[in-house]
Figure 1 (cartoon, rainbow, N blue to C red):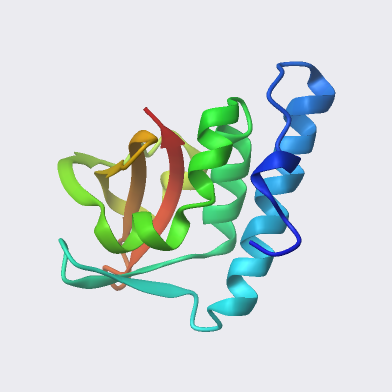
Figure 2 (spheres, helix red, strand yellow):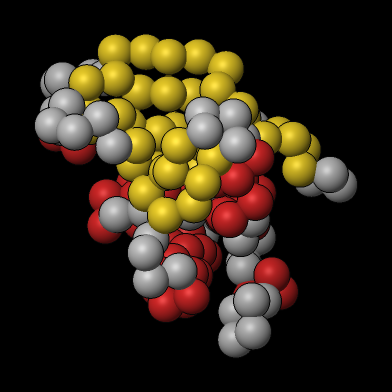
Length: 139
């Protein structure tokens, strides 16, 4: 996490602090994408690749920025994508614009030592059944 450190994440709930956390998440994904040009990680539980797309960054930044713990959880992205296990499968919410492209949503969890449970939502595309990391939040 070279330039970005966990100390850079504001802990408060002011509008500025939430905005700062959102920027932290977007910057984190930019660095992650540069380090992972194929933008995917193999998940041991699903035995398939999970892809990171613009939607992943958009949704995670929107939701995870609301809480310090969720913003911090994003910094474990590679680990979460590799080791999270599926706990539930749902239909996608076709009333939500960002979920229209998915035929189903997978709820996955990862227990991070000295942190706690982290939830990763994964969308399964209607077109080709590719798995897309949709959102990450601390539970």
